[in-house]
Length: 292
Image (cartoon, rainbow, N blue to C red):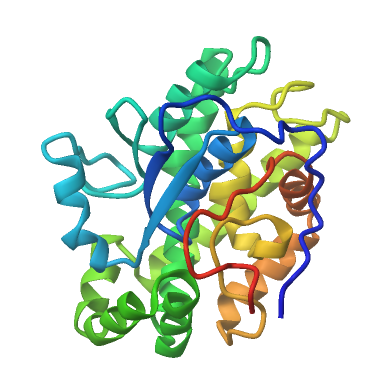
């Protein structure tokens, strides 16, 4: 069965920008930090292909891609995705740095995604103080239901890689949880923080502005829509570039939070952004996300 995409592509270029060869994106396909980069490339019309990976398995690949370029920070490890290789052979790491490179090179005058320091600061705030909380909530729920994470593997990566993940993940599950500081206490604390961030966005939007910075769409909007909005669980037909759990997954805590956020002003705004501002989405990897 093929899901129909109800996305408005008319306001974005149908033809890609000119590059000497497509960019290459290495990803954990359902990662919300990766989605920031996919959104940016799709919106700007940058041709690319994607090598999707599952957690654990990316450890066997990304060190050879980034070499000595990797660097850990408060929300990622030295070999985290996204990683992008440009048409000029540059290897780019960290979602915001990649987005800023893409914006500086491909955005039209007046449509830059990082027009000022305030946008950079808000984007980094979401990187540090929102993305890690939503990631912990996600992993705590899906890693405690092996059938869910295995199903996500089958829907996001090749059959061979999905099978390899199924074999390996049981032995590495605790390592993932420990590496991301995923504990029941941290998850509960994080849920409260997530709701506060959504309430802050609702207050910003209460004056009628269409975007966080006012009348201009910026990287701050993308960051909140991806790093916070991923807990709304947008599906591929709604614009998300990877396969997230749906409401039939049985992850009760994640679903409860998602339903509340989806019904909120900020949650509805996030879904609106996916519909109106996501761009002409490219699906540059298999399996096809629109086949259920």
